[in-house]
Image (cartoon, rainbow, N blue to C red; front, side, top):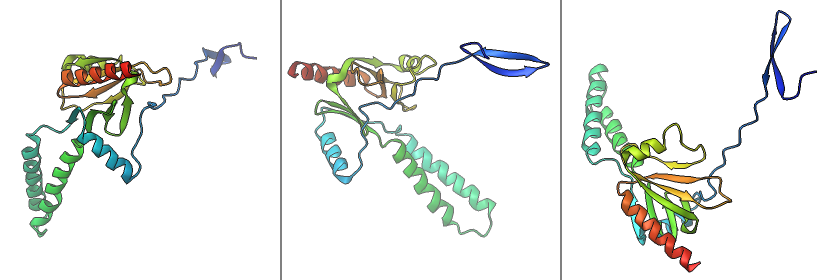
Length: 205
């Protein structure tokens, strides 16, 4: 019979090896305030709220990616054509140039906003009454926050081409998420918008 709190690893040469039992890790739960749009009505309402938002920002790719990506795609298309004689000249260009532009649009499609007493990060919605504190992050602070010491249940929306961001610390006991980290090119302005609306919401409540 095994001693309490241990498990047998192996037996070699008649000698059994034991190790302490490790507790099962706690499950990582999704943020309570993440709500995905599922129908056209939700998408339409979401767009209307963005149009009237007090703060709005698109996490687009840098402007210089737009001329660089098609140029790289054209160079790759030329290489494909030279490597496959007889292939129609226009096929690699028709395939690769639109693909490069579509990829840039997809990478930069996400928007963040402060609207109607909520912090909107794409389809995730955080009521501002649950915001305890907001910290504007520069490049170094965001890198440290997302490093090895990052909380495993933090909600993170990171865009590597954007150096700044905000940390939104929550005060919702029902939410396992301790904080949100969201990229932003204007972290101080976003932090001010979140703080101002959060204070106004708290007073109204």
